[in-house]
Image (cartoon, rainbow, N blue to C red; front, side):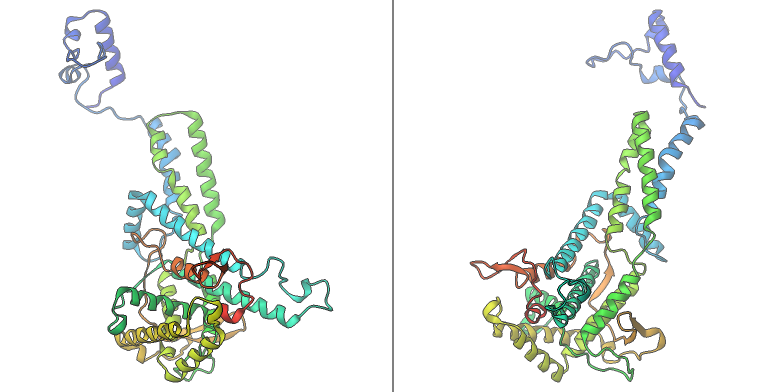
Amino acid sequence: MTVNFTSCYQTFQAGIDADDPRISSYVYAAPVARAGRSFITYTGCQELCGSGPERYDFQLTSDQILTWILPIIAVISQAPFESNKAGRNVLVLFRWLGSPLMSLYHVLWSIRTLGLCALMTDMSVDIDTPESTSDVQDTDTVDAHRINLLKDQFHDMRDSLFILGIMNQYTIRHVAVVGPARSRNGTQSGLIALLRIALFAQDLDLRPHCECPHHARNVQQARRALAAELRQARKKAVIPVLASTFWFSVALGLTLYDSFNEGFSLGLFLVWTPIFVLASMVDRNPTDSDKDISDLNELVGSVVRSLVDDTIFSNFSCIIKEKYHPENMVMTEKSIDDMLCNVRQLCHQLLAADVNLEHPRRCGGKHRRQDRTNNQQIAITSSAPIFHSFAGQGRVRWHTGIAHAICSDVEYTHAGRLPSDNGRYKPGRRNWLEDSGSAWA
């Protein structure tokens, strides 16, 4: 049985105005401030109005569905879900709807970190540095070799910081290191140093692991191939998302102008969804997070396998000391040796934790990566168990990533303006790739 509270209220008010004794007995007479004679008791409401619900009419219900429900569902469907992971998508949807502020915070933090990587890339060269020799007006005094070398250095740094931005969205496995680096700080510093070698080392040769003739000779070549593949694996379809978000904003504006009712409160409750979707578009959004994890682990795994080789490690250590200038930096030769030994010990622990690293895959057709820079196929190495799962867009609570720690470390050890009193660089120096040897070291 349905009731009509509007007509019931009119009947109740008419009985009050006519001093109907039956209606007057239903007036709520408890000592409530400013209650008046328009309050009805529960018993009187049941007797006068009935005990059933008052249902919305179809016109009002359809207006709410067309104005709010369907546009909100359309916007939420554009959120950064993962393919073929229904269970994880349901859990992350509950997280987004249940904690929208924290989810948006994680996305904005990732955008801030990506902005820091982009700023460091932009400031690595002078603002007026020509992109090629054709951009120079005075061709007689131009140093073509220096311009091309600086261009390659800039592109390599851009690839390294781009890969770092991708790494920032993945969780890192817990690595238990025994021996001198058993403390948590020692393990963390060794892991950060290992990732810095994988991202910025230029003179680290990769140990051959199969008969593939196109195997990457050094880590720099492997990074170029990985960066090219990661760029192609980003989600596109930006225009449809922008269009749907625009029409949602139009509907919101019309509703704001039209009325203020319970449907409007529903819209304000979920009005954060377009902001979240637009922010996630700016954030790194992979099409296949599992493949990106595999590719990142393969890059780190190549470095791990190479650093445990005595000859490669010895050559790499000597090159680092030659390029690094302790008189202008914050690290001494002893601290460099300690850092490299700590990293090598961590590499041995990673190899011991995953026996599959000692038995690398062969370079089959599906295990080859195409290097878009020189049309060369780069062989894939076995992966070290460093990166664990995708945590971008607020999927993991309190996940901040590894990029900020590495960028801050690089910025305060080389990419700053001038050494301060405490021997650390202040941020903001431009053209910090001028001394490319020390910068990459």
